[in-house]
Amino acid sequence: MLDLVFVGGEVIDGTGRPGIRADLGVRDGRIAAIGDLSGAECRERVDARGKVVCPGFIDMHTHSDLTLLVNPRAESMVRQGVTTLVVGNCGMGVAPVRPELRGPLRQAFAFLTGDVEWTWESFASYLDCLAAARPSVNVGALVSHGAVRAHVMGFDEREALPEERSAIAAEIRQAMAEGALGVSTGLIYNPSMFADTEELVAVSRAAAEGNGVYTTHMRHEGVQLMEAVEEALEVARRSGARTEICHPKASGKAAWGRAAEAAERIRQAREEGNDIAFDLYPYTAGSTMLSTLLPQWALRGTTDEIVARLRDPAAIARLLHELRHGGSGYHSGLGAPPYEWERVLITSVGSEMNRGFEGKEMPEVARMMGATPEEAFLRLLVDDHLQVNMVIHSQCEEDMRGLLKHPLALVITDGLAFAPYGPLGRGRPHPRSYGTFPRFLGRYVRDEGLHSLEEGIRRVTSGPAARMGITDRGILREGLAADIVVFDPAAIRDTATYTEPHQYPEGIDLVVVNGEIVVRDGEHTGAGPGQVLRKK
Image 1 (cartoon, helix red, strand yellow):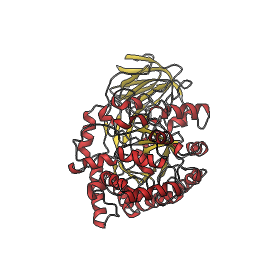
Image 2 (tube, rainbow, N blue to C red):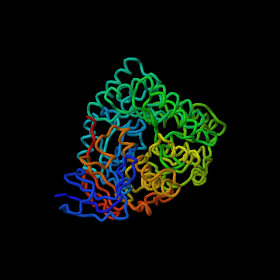
Image 3 (cartoon, one colour):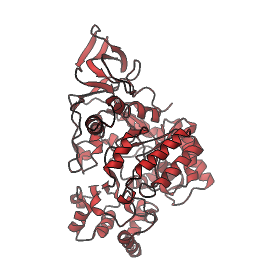
Image 4 (cartoon, rainbow, N blue to C red):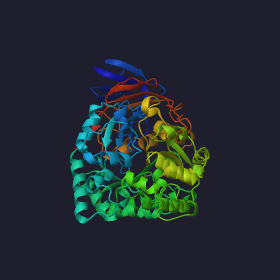
């Protein structure tokens, strides 16, 4: 007796091979059979004629570390076909954490939206909290270098001493033993930004010893892009780690056109024997904390220390001069100042008094404040204690499309599991959290023909699974986990926009996680069959 049979769909197995017209049967959370199942007994048959039946999408780069605890239904993710997501990216994570550092770490990683009590200390206890939440999707986690460095060194803005590097590596090995899929770094974020290359080698080597992946948000994304790529390649060579470069981009007009050079250099390194690839989201705008537009000298210390610095008249004068005339030590997605402030959209703020700035571009915020954009920028950071996020329009379509076509590219959201209701419906987050995979398969695969449908599906299923070391998902094959998406290839499309981001996509008919239907006819069933995927 089968639990589910999908009848007559185009089964695309996720490997890149051509699809076949077939039935697919599910039993006990696993794929039981693919072929002619017209005579099989089953509890439910789903008419999939005219639809694609493929593996659930694997989003290997999210920041849903806390939002899954706020709302484990993972609405914005599962409704776009995501059945497995990975948290702990960009060096931003929530474990391990000493009790006295919970507040400072939470403030430092304000991008990780979610008002929940931090009850965990170890990486293992955090994973236990995720499992207890009974999410609708499977969850894997990277241990974040930022959390580990803070755990060992606090927020000291300096290079690690040899004994501290050893302690950091030991913490990463411990997290790997507790189930981490690998380790991530975020080299534009405090405290990861203060690590030197030697520390990064030690970090990635510790992950490699446990057959884990090393993922990196590089140190530069603008005119110094190639320097950042070379550092990532050096770390990969010296550590031997399976390396994933997170969302490389040529940000800021001065860097436009350099994305192809970066991708070619990564390809060369791959041919030289390094297990290295990259990923990106199909949008020309990114999203992160507004504070990343500050220079490194201003980002030293805890959030309280940074805010105190931003209140100092001498620091304010220096920052206003640099923001208007240029300065060094800036690693933002807009390159170095002076900034084109109209490219910065405020997505969320930390205080009710500034809620009216959400969804506004910085020049409009400045007009509302009666200030210049530079003054408004600093005032907003101080008023909201750095708890401000933004969308930043920094790339050109030609660069982004070229990266999407590259043989080593995989597709991610870099987003969070949101919902258009409750606390996760506040603000105007980047539309990628709702629309990445339908946008990629609809606009860039179907409409623009960047890839065949089979290849497009591979880049969001078996490709990410292989990079993360997930062995029983991402492919439709007998015996593997039954994570399945049924969608209309002619209708799939994103509807979320920068001004109205809390909108579900179209064309996703049914989503199955571990054999249980979570989305049916575009509606969430309320099921929570997701599992925490711990590396063994």
